[in-house]
Amino acid sequence: MTLVALFANEEFAVAVADRRRVQLSTGIHMDDVRKLHQLNDQIIVGYSGIYLPIGNNEFQGLAEELIMDNSVLISARSTVEDITDIFSKALLRYVELGIPMETLELTFHFGGKGRDGRYMLGRVSCWEDFQPMQMQSNDNGLIWSLSRAEYAVDPWLTAQIASLPKINDQTVRDLAVSLVEHTAERDGYVSGTYDLIVI
Image 1 (cartoon, rainbow, N blue to C red):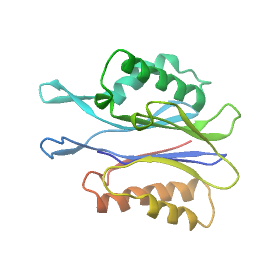
Image 2 (image 1 turned 135 degrees about the vertical axis):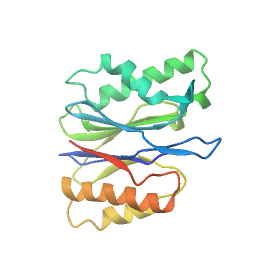
Image 3 (image 1 turned 180 degrees about the horizontal axis):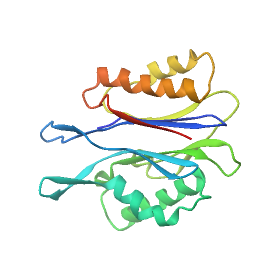
């Protein structure tokens, strides 16, 4: 289970993710997963998804495997639009090969520069049939995208964003940390241990 959130305005993007993974069959949790990766100088990816047993009590994250497999297609100039398309096509290929959708329970959140040079967000998720979703930033404030476990944090987050005195990389960084702390107190599937990237 997980908490992953990406925020952006026209000038920057912030990503935060807790480190928890849970073996649903036993309830055992480990806070050992880094769910954020910087794909190039201008793109961050955060993910939520399942881990598959690979033997010897070890697990492989399918999201991490997809990131590694598709890294050869990502250049220094790849934009959020490019990368959402790459990941959408990769996941849809699995579906075309007959892999059941329920075994591909993954969501990728992307933040960074778009083709126009402004920061934006993208998402590719099993909950949206792996179609590439993109959100353009605008001068109205902060855009965000998240995956969560059980606790519905959206109302709290919406109120926090509305009360920000100003939107800059520091206030959004602080908001991201508060989001993890707030959620970890209310959801046993979310760890207070986290990673954060600002670009």
